[in-house]
Image 1 (cartoon, helix red, strand yellow):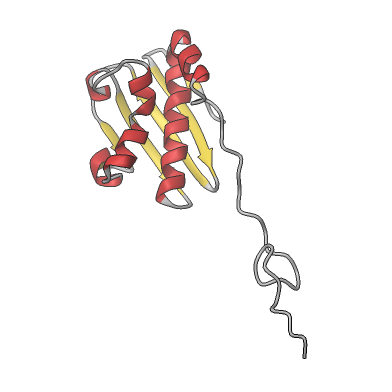
Image 2 (cartoon, helix red, strand yellow):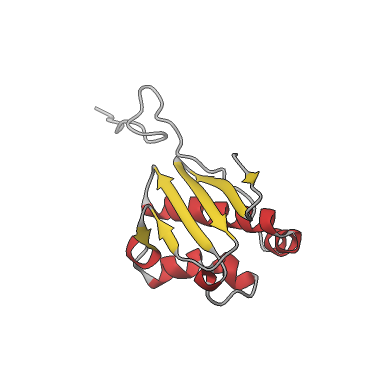
Length: 138
């Protein structure tokens, strides 16, 4: 968990979900939102993904995040949905580091908690984690 606060109102934060890891660089100035050097609408094209991405800003009453923040995100690993969870957690952590009032609101809405669920490992003599071989009577 690398969180750092620089003198020019820049906050660096990270978030994780399954095997996805997101690093967020948030500046408190007018700018743009980039994820892996792509626009957010191109990286997360569906409306559902965009609404999940904007949830921390919506909870804080920030209508358009690009008018208040310059956000750059690097995300790797896992699937798009896990990457989205990692990005939202990292942005929530960065916003709470920026302003302590934001922290209380985000904590009440469970936005600062990491989802610890991981894929269960495959066990010996089983086809998957829990699925056994087919039983044959004869």
